[in-house]
Length: 190
Length: 190
DNA sequence: ACCTGAACACCGTTCAAGT
DNA sequence: ACCTGAACACCGTTCAAGT
Image (cartoon, rainbow over all chains, first blue to last red; front, side, top):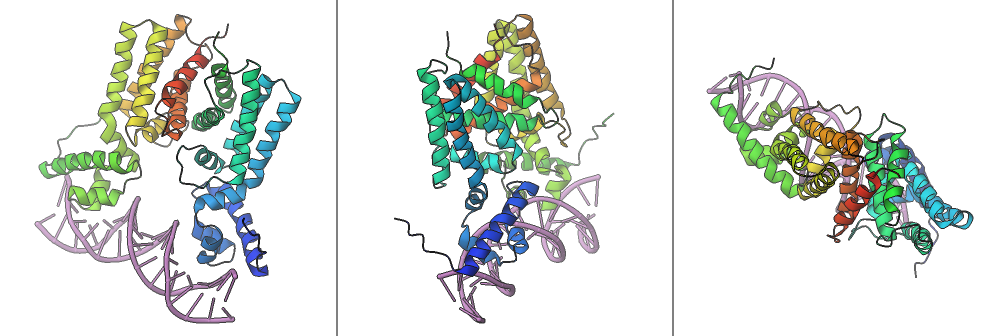
């Protein structure tokens, strides 16, 4: 099992500075933010960035773990509080809104639900999928969701809705309409 | 008005070679294909590529004008042959499938429906939007489409569905299910 | 009028040398 | 064990010189 050998003090310091700077850079310039620039702003050599985060994805993930875990926790929270159909609906809304509010998050969630993605499935994306699966199963048991979709489909469609909403930058209302349209489409056929 | 002053023979030759090579390169490497490589493969200097196509978008567009015009024509064809609801449904299906079959096309269509896009609205994207608007209007008159969506919304959502389908590379059946879900969501509320 | 290709700026990634 | 930063490869874009 993965030994969590503690990092050397300077390594730990660099790791944390990189994460902080990366979050700022992604927020400012999107997922394509210059890695070299991030290293410079964190006051470390570029090699150090690669040592800690071998790929851009790894850095994006590390920068957004907290937010993704929060989304997963939120699913269970809503599942416990609302009827299954409403819980899924509300969660999809928050998921889509959250996805486009945080720059860089959309590409991260997208790669988490990409079929045959080369990106290693990380713990937090697994949590997110698990939470989605529980909401989906409950909604289907309650007859509030089409039987021919799986959790992964719902997550991909949410990604699609987020993408469509991004195209409507000026129309702040679009996302609500697009999510409601997804919700309608997910209803079981009569 | 735009004078169509004929190009010099060598310019015309370069223009056409660039287009041909670009279409191949985009098909092979996607929208991010190296421009320098395209110029080299076409046997021209990189400056020549920029002279004819100042931006990557311009080149993408020129390479795919025919396909986009065909999609627009197809909309009118279906509109004349089928009941309004079915025509829209069938067209959306063909649009989504076509979008993901041709590499590079998705980003092009996406930028065509992006709000406040800096990309000049080209003639062919205007045609596409016009064709979509006619299908949408007819479907709404027939009561087969929600009244609170416009043509631009439908095109954005189709882009979203194409994006979601792309995430399901392995599952060739996903696109059908996702398009049908969009169709369901677009139905008027009872 | 159009083309060429060197020159510039920028970015990701690796790795030898250093502590 | 970890860090540094020079070195390399690659790409987009511009522009002086050439035809």
